[in-house]
Length: 260
Length: 220
Image 1: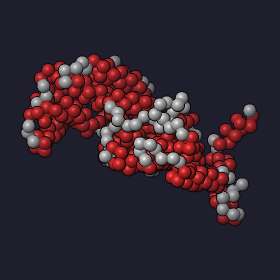
Image 2: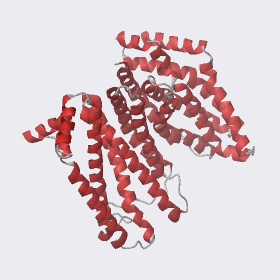
Image 3: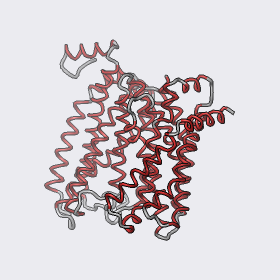
Image 4: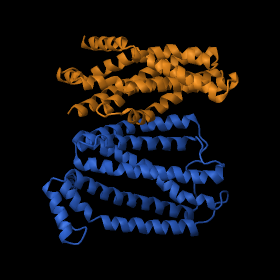
């Protein structure tokens, strides 16, 4: 138990956060790339065809994991926002501002792949169906968090706290937005994966496996990208601190990536 | 006492600077003219989109006024005085929201049947239209305090304010325009109005706290 508490406190301080996470980056990147490669090959070449949608369904191996990530990352932005707001943790600020662009990117990927799939399946790129609309509103929420941060460029700490407030307000509103949009209308196909084995979910393990692999791959990619972004965020905001010059000197003297 | 004094002062300031009050209405009139010009003047086409357009116009015309809720007070320093005087900040926010609603919300509610008439909205929908706006305009003002408090330190923050507030207003628009649409179709608007009221209660309790937090960060 003590080690977990110690680890938690260490992760809260920028220098040790930087030191600890710099060892994780390479393994995370390798895992992310390896799993993506495996998942895509498995999904695009070996998974069976869908009896209704033929080969077009294969876009779900990108679309569904990206959609999961878009919401998962917003939850992270919101929780990091709460930590920023309540405890004013610098690392939480870094995690929040590092996660937001990645989440926005996954949201955009979700929308784009959805549109590409919609053209052959629905006959239109865009339809104002509930999930697409709420995904689009999610993109606006991300843009709001990043926009308010960018607008206060002269004081990053104040900017981070205001962005945290926006993220928290978004977190409170997200369920309201989602439900209101769902009641509004829906023609999107039901969930692709259901833990209880719903009737129109994916039943075939050969189809499910690449999907889950891709879900894992996006998680690792997010961790890698978020941590390296958070590191450069900390280097930038703490540039006048001693640990930063030490860390950078260490990187210059030793091989890149090592800074203990 | 101070709550009343603040509301009175803000209403008076708006009243003296009449543009605050008629700006949204002129905006609505200008935009509503564009619909028949662009869509064709067919009464049936217009009546079909009328519930949504009247509602969106009410929303947009309020949106352009939100930026100023705190801006002047922030720039001339009176906002700092509220904080320093030890006044309950969420309560001060509430007074600003109330003053904004009195000077913008009420004219918008009263003007809605006019834009409705111009777009051939069926007359029996007017009651629900005004009722839905009566519930929703306080939400606009309350969410506006959050948006305005977030951007008051930024030059040309209007665009950012729209980005921040639009996702929060989406459910309000769905329920509000939905209520009017259901009425024109001859259905009951009860469910929509109840959900709208729920949004109003939520905003009334949480928005002043959020706006007060934003003000505190901005004044640090």
